[in-house]
Image 1 (cartoon, chains in turn cyan, red):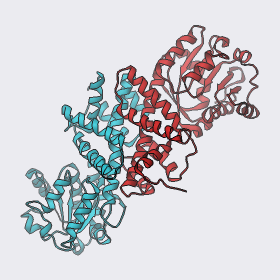
Image 2: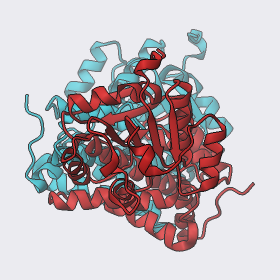
Image 3: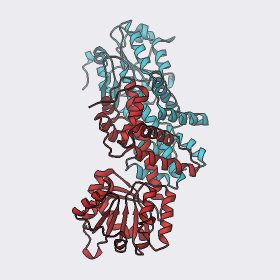
Image 4: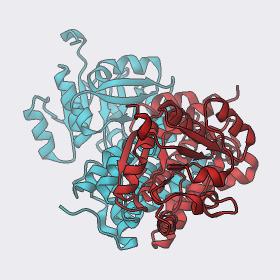
Length: 304
Length: 304
């Protein structure tokens, strides 16, 4: 449903990486006036040429924005967009909404919500799931929590970007908490897929047979089916990098520790991603965690 | 396809537990004359009343059997069926085939194949996957390896019991190796599901929401979707018990160690099942591994 011109809010997207660029494109596609910001001037230029509004000065633009979508790498960058040297929070009008899509500790989401509320700015805690392809087609899953007012103000952007919106609570926190639970499983399952495929190699099972059989058996997972093909194709171009799971499983284990919750599988999986990063694979696709399993056991992964 | 009477081999099934009973019933359903043995005389009687042949003396029966299907708990029981005090191996006719369906170390499968070959008895290394429901309907997945002669001799029983037969090699070993790879993933995924659901509780996410959202996101797995409902229903009646994964992840870590392969996630998951067993939950459904996570963090699992 295309909103009528009078009800078209102006959107600013911060972070034009593979996810953010796709989401910004979905917003344009839905006819919402959208401005894109990125640390890379090339990405900003590219988005403007695709139909984005002129970024102009952040300060002047901020006063016109109805919806801020933040899709940066981590909590520190999210805080910087809002409250850093060039932070926009002070210039946002009351009733504007900040949609925070980055994976962060739920406590951070709660803190941001409270800080923005001081100036009447709304906050939607709304991490995303689905990858760059679904971001570009407006088919993301969004795990959202926030006040009724924050949901209402975000509605046009949610509709443009998401296939499914899980509404998880009436304040910030549960959205990020659910995303962190998802990342616990996602990280453990990627490392488990790498462990299983290389263990299979150690037992004389070739990687292709392993994929063909296991993906039809009770041992399968969404991540096994998605990441093992990267190993089979010897293709470690980063769809999502090893270092993302160093960060996200770090958030899991830190959030767990604060609640005195023991998460031994998450901790063990984190160790594998840290070792992969330390071995020089941090910027490669997260399936490259298989390389440290192979190296430790003197095994050869498939070569193309 | 129902075999003609002349081509109907006689089958003996050893182990009439939830899997074995279903498989024996599938064999009867396919009109194969089938005799069932179990440590429980009641189970033997029940199967005979359903149409099974009279067990008679094992020694006399053994000489008539064309296909032996072994569905016992572990390698020791498998060896006992064949070479123990009442073992049938010495009385099997040359050309008979032993289908070994239990999860065992691949080296054990290779040893059994060699030992039976001394008297001309064939061996199919053919672990099963799919659970008791699929066993009863003849819809199992079977990961099989063995000689062409072993596959040929087993064909009528495979057809009766399996929806999918993965043919993984021309000698014993790869069938068991693939099953062990599957069990690595299955065990890690069950423990990860328990870790994720209880971690969610620690972060204020109720278990039902966790299931509803994660099963639609990238963090899902076959085991997450299958086992978390047991936690939600507070139903720990054993479909497959905690102690099965103490055994199976033990086989994984032992097979890994023999190849000097480090399997940190399998080892960590094994620890959780061992702790669950040590806490008195060994005979409960494997989803009861969630109970030790909850106990360690002072959390309440759903109660019905």
